[in-house]
Amino acid sequence: MAEKAVISCALTGVLTDPDKFPVPVTPGQMAQSAKEAFDAGAAIMHIHVRNQEEGMGRFPSWDADDAEAVCDAIRAACPGVILNMTTGVIGDDISGPVACLERVKPEMAALNAGSLNYLRARSNGTWAWPPMLFDNPVSKIEQFIEVMHKHEILPECECFDTGIVRSVGLFKKVGMLKHHVDLSLVMGVASGMPAKPAWLPLLVDEIPEGATWQVIGIGRQEVWELHRKAAELGGNLRTGLEDTFYLPSGERASSNGALIEAMATLAREVGREIASPQEARKILGLRAE
Image (tube, helix red, strand yellow):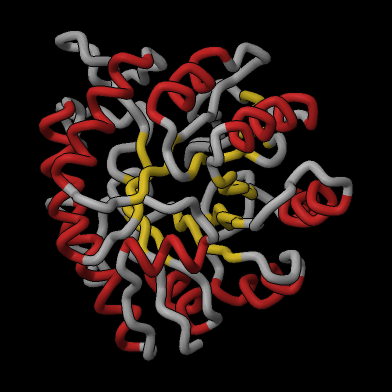
């Protein structure tokens, strides 16, 4: 409990319409939003890069030039910040994420650690979108790990259900994960683990010994009790406009900075101080700046 909490900010996510929600898109917008979050206590910026063509900002980009422009702007605005890039793609072709990792060389990258039927149902009994498989077989995971190890990038193992949490321990056991193990417990996706604080002690029991972890809480203000429980159990913390648009009060958040300020307040309320980027590097076993 005494260890400082590392706070991550998930700046923008994927597919959220910037015409309807206050998500940053351009390098300048990303840098400004990151600076507000950084000043509020976020040591890590989790980055999705959007298509930079006019009118296309709702869609992701795997163009390494776009990734470099966004990440250079964030690094310039937030000296010492830790970058954590997404790698999530459907299918076998991982050339886009790999090109971005090799160009930017972030300290961390999300590693989707298992497959999930990605589902959501409407109140009228129809699918919110056509059922889809977010496919992450072991062969694909191994390819990503090889690239991350080559460039000294820490994999952040994203776990959408309990079997995936347990699989991370198996990856470590067979030698796929060779260094420090870090997990994100993704809670709140309709077909994954629910955003219920009572689940957390059970999940933490399944995490490999010595690993660090955090919760990715997807939802509205109900996710804040989940984050509070994570802080009490010694986990690291993450929020941002990718995960929620709501503050603990239920009010809509105007920015990433407002969400990170609320998270830092929550951490201090349960007795956790906030880790600086330098302290976060030591806690997570990252390469030197």
